[in-house]
Amino acid sequence: MDSLITAAARALAAGDPLGALKRVALRDDAPALALRGIAMAQLGDLVRAKALLRRAARAFGPKETVARARCVVAEAEIALVSRDLGWSAKALDSARATLEEHGDRVNAAHARHLEVRRLLLIGRIDEAERMLADFDASPFPPASRTAYELVVAGIAMRRLRTKEARAALARAEHAARLARIPALTAEVESASLVLNTPAARLIARGEERALLLEEVEALLASKALVVDACRHVVGEARTVVSLARRPVLFALARALGEAWPGDAPRDALLARAFASKLTDESHRARLRVEVGRLRRVLRTLADVRATKRGFALAPRRAREVVVLARPLEDKHPDEHAAMLAFLADGESWSSSALALALGRSQRTVQRALESLAAAGKVQSFGRARAVRWMTPPVPGFTTTLLLPAPLPID
Image 1: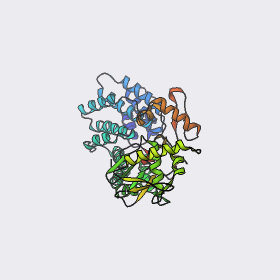
Image 2 (image 1 turned 90 degrees about the vertical axis):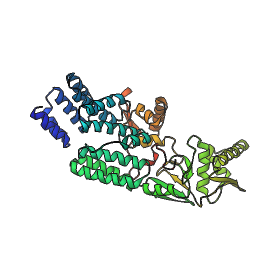
Image 3 (image 1 turned 60 degrees about the vertical axis):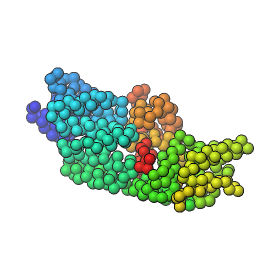
């Protein structure tokens, strides 16, 4: 490898893409194309970066399997950053096996790290955690170690294990200082904000207050009966009843939780459950049916008792009933909250990537995006298959609890 290629590689490792381009910008040999692709990725031109890496992979000879595998890993990372979640996981796994076979432990570990990041991004926390359990990060240089610790912190946050998250972020901060790359330091600082900004609201006895993530963790581990409007479940300690697929029952449970220790009037329950201003005897009859269903669903946690003006929630063991709500929400809770949480990460998403992450059909996601765009909540750029969607994150709030992941009490 010649001196210019070596110097460009060192510049990229130090986070200096412009310095790397000065050395190889006019060269079209395979190593130079690969380095140019990585440099363009660091500068944010992901489309150009992907094209250069593909050219580099084709330009490497049939015997240069390691170099081609490294190009595949770099392209997979670009796909992950650009939220192109449809890239071939098999190709990445094959590249990782090739790198391991030839003794390139650092890039092989990085390939596995990308697999874990993808699983975390689409909400498959169990799989990501299993893959991370036997993950050896010792070969990583400081820059890659920073990214690894950020993934560890991300899993801990989604599991609501804030002590583990803080420890991982501290290790990430230390590794970022050793790497001396400003962009990495900024990423760690941004991740740390999640632990220091409101993650949810507590509604109890007619009052509201903001909660940090560690306060949410403590609340879910307490003996209170929690009506969780972030994940649409009702639970206490280790007993949880999911109402995610029963919106009417959850709307009733939330209204009763907000009214506790008092009762909720029938008119208020009708408005919350059926979103109707005009009610008649058929609505009241349906309310009695739905309350009966809620009573059966929550029978191990609480009773739903009739009062003169409505219904009241009576917990069986818990001494208190509280509602955990999103930090910000419309007058009517947004049915697209999970989608907005993904878009609020500041990256641009394709509808196909959102469909994969949310486990829905692409057409359903497209209709939802069009509805959100009409309401001014998201914006798109590009055309046809290249269209991407995004929304700026809400200042001062974290969306961690809106992302799909199992509760620690599941």
